[in-house]
Structure formats: structure tokens, C-alpha cells
Image (cartoon, rainbow, N blue to C red; front, side, top):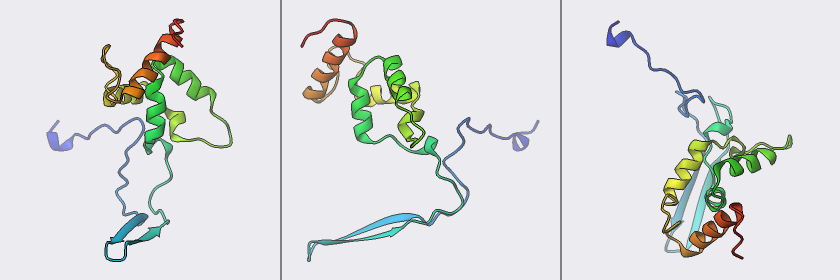
Length: 136
């Protein structure tokens, strides 16, 4: 088979790319002389659907996940919180998401759990509590 005949395998979750132009946008202009800002918001989405699998976790969701160390406990809690009233990106959480959060929060180190001391201590306390060693 020639290289030009081969096709790339698509991802299991699909791609974020839509091969279309979606006009939805938020544009912010800040005017220093008047200390005011102007926001232009275009809500209309064209050429794609609202797909939870392609949304990002919010920083606050990542922070709370980073404080709970055991992956299986995190996944169980998240899956138990699912309701029919509203699905969110966090309900599609995977172990890969948790590994990425662990890496970005520098949680692989046994010495320093996080660059921020408060988060590091909170993470350590949660880890000790899950092991049955209550330190508080």
C-alpha cells in the first residue's frame, strides 16, 4: 500500500476539529483611557454539536481532584454524582485526566505534593485519611 492511500485512524472519542467554521466567539476590548471594557458575544454554533467529551475541566475541578489522591476513589465519587438532570465534563473523567492533573500539580513527588504549601498539606492529609491514618 502506498503511503498516500493510507488513512489515519480516528480517535475513539472523535476529534475537536469540525472541518467547518463556527462563528461562536467572545471578544474583549479593554480601553485604558476610559478604564472600561467592551465584550462582543456571538452565541450561535454552526457545524458541530455540544460534545461534553471535548470540553476542558475547570481549574477548580482540577484543584479538587488533585486533593483526592486515590484514582479509583475519585472515579467512584464522580460517577456516583451523575444525575439525569445535567451531565458535565467532569462526569466523563478518565484515569488519563487524573494522570494529567497529577503531572500538572506535581503530585508524583513523595516529598512535595504541590508547589503551593496549602494544597500540598491538604493533599497529604487526604492521602493519610484514605489510608486510615487520621492526622487531624
